Image (cartoon, rainbow, N blue to C red; front, side, top):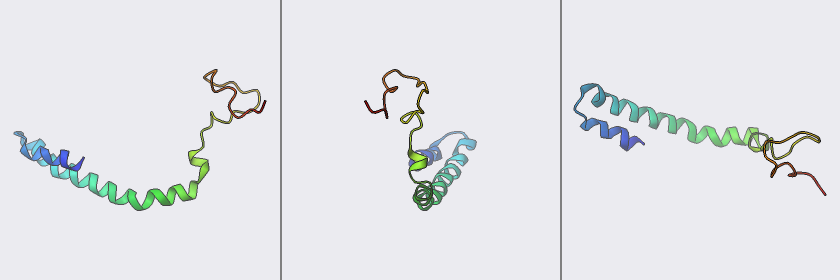
Length: 75
């Protein structure tokens, strides 16, 4: 992504040429901020964040797809 933004340095328009390094720097700053933050957020949220609500419907609750309506129910 950063390399693609730096390709804007070859643009003919001055506005696009100036946007390339700024956008590339923004992508790198966002990456540097998320690399340490994401594992910590996932550790705090745990399975609650990653669990699918539709995979465990409440008894009597309808699901969007008839194929998933029996998931989580014992026979």
